[in-house]
Length: 378
Image (cartoon, rainbow, N blue to C red; front, top):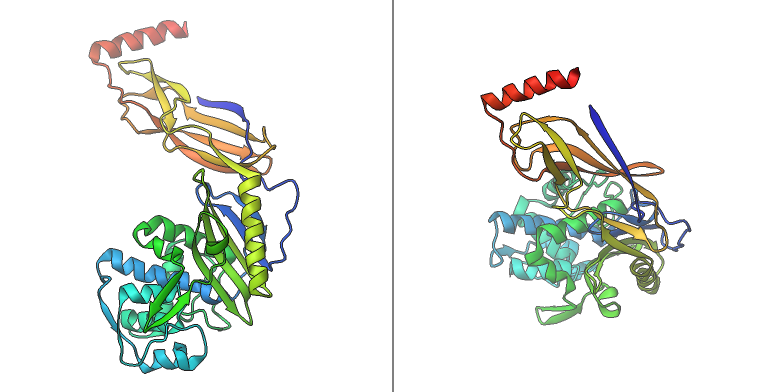
């Protein structure tokens, strides 16, 4: 028999705000990094030119190679004339000021990509890791799909204009999450405010690093086609982390003002809570032929939620499981499902698992259970 249990929950999960929060950005996404709750979505699924924000993917490829042991921070790459011409001082674009034939260590190259937004640094990484920038861009697209970036196509390592080089604000937010999650040992580079190479000091272009406590990443972008953009991350004093993506702004000032406004709103208007801790018992399921009559079931993972302050009683918790469960039962065995729903439908699910193992009764116990079932039917 299928068991259904419904409860009201005093918080709102994945429910869009009851009022619109305006932004002049052409594309925008504000998301809670832990829960994935989207506080603001303005054309976040539209494919757009990401400009230098696509260098997040370039850096991810380097981080991934470091983690896999294919590179070390002291590995030296050689600067080609092509990298110098397309992305060096001669190009007039964002540059690390690398020189043709120069050897540069990966540890410096990463800062050239992240802090200085050097196009030459990106091309050097691409050529030395994949043989050519075209091959590297194809690998970037392949890796993006593995990470769940469904609408991202890379045609270069820099983000320089190309009609097919596109990302979405949503994909950029997912990529930011992945960098923070997968490479904590390297993520600190994104909060560095300046880097000096070849005796030339350059500052990080991320405006939030200078204006908001807790801002620690990630990457700006700008071309004539894309306008001014920013993929940012801010961690508040209470541990909440927000990820912001904006694009299509007209100036650096607009980018700075809008990013501060949106992050400030997200931190003040929303908060997080845990519906059920990981080991909290949510139900007891009857056991057939077990050494005990019931087994406790608990969420496989803690269930954090984001909700707008003042909006409560919007979510219902539904617990489903089959009963009785036949022993033996192993600790951690999936026995049911916890589903959170709002008026739009299912928003989050997590397996319910056995809190403890339950052994199967012996022959005599089986006999007793069978005889008892006969009498119960009478």
